[in-house]
Amino acid sequence: LDILVIHLFNALLYASVLFLIAGGLSLIYGVMRIVNLAHGNLFALGAFITASAVGQWFAGSESAWLYLLLPAGAVGAAVLGAILEPTLLRPFYRRPEEYQLLVTFGLLMILEDLMRFVWGPYPVSATVLYEKLGSITVGEWIYPRYNLLVIAIGGLAALFLWAFIYRTKFGVVLRATSQDMRRASALGINVNLVYVQAFTIGCFMAGLGGAIIVPSQSAVLGMGVDALVLSFIVVVIGGLGSLEGALVGALIVGVIREIGISVFPEIELAVLYLIAAVVLLVRPAGLFGRAT
Amino acid sequence: MTTAPLAHAARSPLKIVFWAVPIAVLLALLPLVIDPYQTILLAYGLVMAIAVLGFNLLLGYTGLLSFGHSAYFGVGAYAVAFMVKYLHLQSMELFVLGAIAASIVVTTVFGYVCVRYTRIFFSILTLALSQVLWSLAFKFFWVTGGTDGLRVPTPKLLGVVTGESEDKIHFLSHGYYYYVLVVFILCVMLMWLIVHSPFGKALQAIRDNETRARFVGIRIRRYRFVAFLVSGVFTGIAGALWVPLNGLTTPDILYWPFSGEIVFMSVLGGFRNFTGPIVGAVVFNYLKTYAVGLTVYWQAFMGVILVVLVMLLPTGIVGTAKLLYGVARRRLAR
Image (tube, rainbow over all chains, first blue to last red; front, top):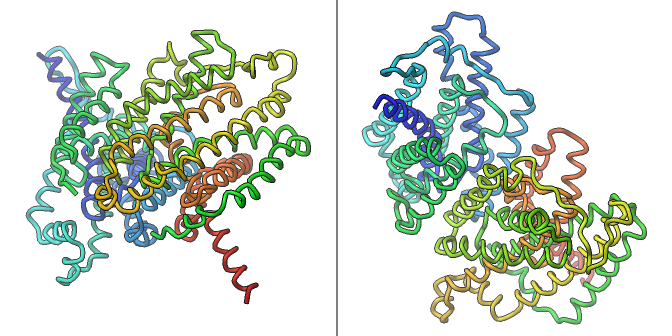
């Protein structure tokens, strides 16, 4: 039974990070109808910033301070998002989707090399945060405490986001813009501002995902490209543009991956895609998607 | 989105021949003038042109943006590699036939799922499915060689042993170049016929107005499926031709950024023109080769080009050239 608990923790760990990435992607699509292919790179950027803040820039400091540095990556990604949306993406909302995908693909290439330029080709790690927390024992197994922190942050982020979107005035504005941009604009909402905010939140989530996972892994080049494809599976299963969908999709993918790693490691990814394809055949808009 | 450039497509066959024959002759004579390295680069460009030509049947003519064409390219390439490794074949003709068969099988399955969707969902689904193949090629390393890939020796062309007697560079820049050129010309002719057939016209009708096309009695999903199939097979042929050129196939050509490069090429040339993908593929190939030689950060360089291109020249090289040509002619006429 104890091993089941460990597996459950692992699945939840994976799901929290995936939710942060895919939730951001989905939020941005829901509001702006744009699929950001560079979203994975913002996740990677978050990981790199936190890793170098903790592991290099402030390496010697008190460990309590280091934990406060954890969200640095999220903030960095959010700032980049707030710059990118008005400059690069705004001219493309009226253009066909091909161009939107292409401009974000161009952005992906640029960001990928930008990170290579700043951090070089070697992995950057911040394992000190991971090691400092030690581990707990579940029966006869030990489990790193840091992973539980990640799960908690993932859960809190989901809760926060839900409250933010369904319980605040800003959330109402956001949802109104998402449903009918023109009418929201006619009612006096500054749509451009909402777009910047939504994009920034989406990037913040992706950056946070990268920031909290980096102490247990390392930041490596190419991690963003991998993450994007996984979060595509999540949003395809859950429904593009739906946060509930992203949450459920992330949980499904997390559980299946955890089973997959121990039972059928070779075809673990293929099984995930297969499930996504089956969901699409049965429910074209995903489990929680709106028909467009 | 305007559809005006396509009006040019209705010009007389004589005029097409007037343009196409000199270009074909030029391509045939070039290896005599330029050095072998340049010839091999051109061969890479022509191979990619076949792939992008196939891809553009979906994007330019059917209005479906596939972000998973690396899958069919990779299927073609791996089909050849498997035929070498497990069946010990050497004949290039068999390789191409095998690649066609393999890509028909894969595109049938993928197409069946994908053509139910359009727009962004189509793009994401094609991307996700192509990554299934990538992960399989990546994980089943005892079959596919994993990240090391599979080596493919010099093949026999038309049953003649050409690879053993001469060195590889000479083979690639002469015999193999002409082999690629012939296949390329055949593919271009075939695609031209497809695009200008009633079937091609029906695809364009679907692209321009799905509802009206359905009213006219076009079975939209079936047409899209066939277009998907043809598109995938062209790209598969390109994959088969690419392997002997590269000598090695790795999972990189199945990874989705490679699909992005294919999209890039068609936009670079201009996906609203028949010749756009060809020009785009050849130019992209040179551009990338020189960017890689110039700087480690070639990816950012290409990314900037893509962003600028999409922002300022959405009709690509061929579209812009046609526009300038039209302006110049009107100026002169006055």
